[in-house]
Image 1 (cartoon, rainbow, N blue to C red):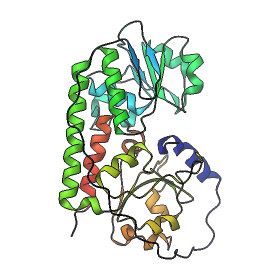
Image 2 (cartoon, rainbow, N blue to C red):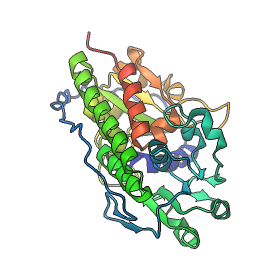
Image 3 (tube, rainbow, N blue to C red):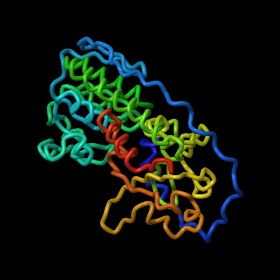
Image 4 (cartoon, one colour):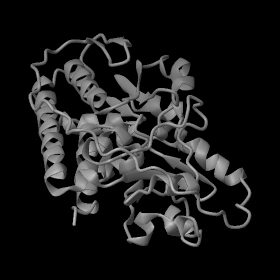
Length: 335
């Protein structure tokens, strides 16, 4: 289970969980994690692409359309990202905050209709009113909407497991829309961005820093593990020793404060989902925890709150490029 899909469960668990009783003792010192793997080799070249109204996506799902789609409604951040890369504007979005990020549309996002409803339970009648040729959602979240949506438009459910799959989805949509040149150009730009960042973090010594990307609440901490899209991306650049904790999809992303301390991260990137002015960020919730205070990143003031929608919902190449830039700026070079 990807960390992005588990965020809703994490929030529900946080609401139901009782406060942690007392102060936990720090765990015994753990053996050091292995140094970061050798620099991955990133192919900078993007292969040619042909237009087609039939594609097979990275997960083997085939999609055939009667014609190239022009009006596409986005229920996932990947969709918004891909359309912007292709020079298109969503016919509607359920991710207005992500779409308004400067890496995507910025202020121009205000012109895009917002699909009402909560994530995974968007209002189907409102989607239909937008007259889409195609609706793109998130696998494992929007499955239940398929019968209703497919009464008026094809529904394509996507979920990239790593950056390569994000690129492949972009190529798929570029092929479907006939915007093959834009897709290839965007792919090449992202590959160059990632390849340059891999080289830069090795040259600066940043690659040796232990980094963790986390979310949730003090009672229920989630980590974007190295098996997730964002965790895998950060593992290309830094030392990221945070694998999924077992095969149970409900708990694979859960880390306790003690387990975080045992990993000794040098830098913490946290994205906090805030729903009111009274809500506190994740790092603020943990600030008084004595175990949290022992983590190297906390002691060295290297805990950074990052853009929640970009790091939480961004799945396309524009979002991933912005994450690379922000992480590279926040993670310090070797002394």
